[in-house]
Length: 337
Image (cartoon, rainbow, N blue to C red; front, side, top):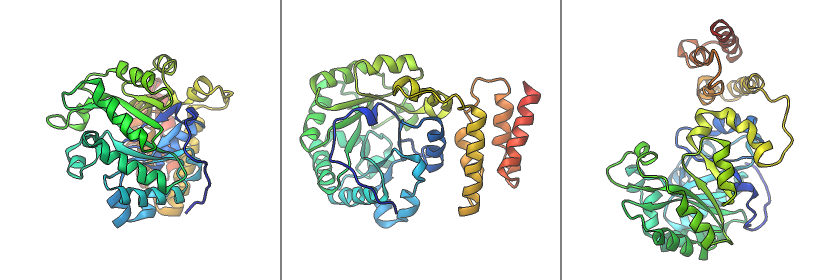
């Protein structure tokens, strides 16, 4: 367990300027370690962890992370204030720099647990949950939500939700700029079918200038991010960060004003991740394939990328050491280029 100290909640936008969205089955600790090799400053989020998993399950399995992942935030799923407060305290003790409440996931499984996007219909309950967590921890408590649920596209629905939750002590809202349709669409369709309406998030920032507002949904280029950062405090990127991770390599210099690292190359990042695979295998018996799956987009768009990806995803090679697989991938890439 990690010990750390933090100040009270802050409206400083910097931690949320660029972030990688929490994504189930994707942003596990291995993915976050990989992303941190590409950007030193972007805020990284865990997959959603339910309060039930922490209260009744294996806490270290859900909360352990490598210190190199920092800054990293814990996203919780739940709707019972005291349970969320308990889990927020666990997250703070483990060393997370933020606790985020999921009010945006539309899956029916999550709805059956009475949390996720359906919580937007119960702003007082969300306010009670936020207040319980704010009272329990010293680190920021934030909320990730949609701009609406089902076919209700009134701006006032989101405005009233944010206003009520802000009164409970939340100062940072991460807004996925689509409605969540609770019936009739799969989670994947909910990321694609409801239209993006960025102007709703821009309006929210104008109405609540004292709050930190970051936007999520559909961003694939730095030019798009630049446009949003002129109006908002931050941009959260999801699928594109996963499928085209090399994009993260320009974030520090472009969005944080940090000096570019001239030694940052795809080859160096791959070698660093292989060294991590070796450490994980020695310490925990972790198969290299469960880590390598997160970097399959690293050579996106380059000659030979398909052959390189095929080698790293070939489970017939899983008995080989990771370094031997890397060498095979390089030979295959050179032959295909």
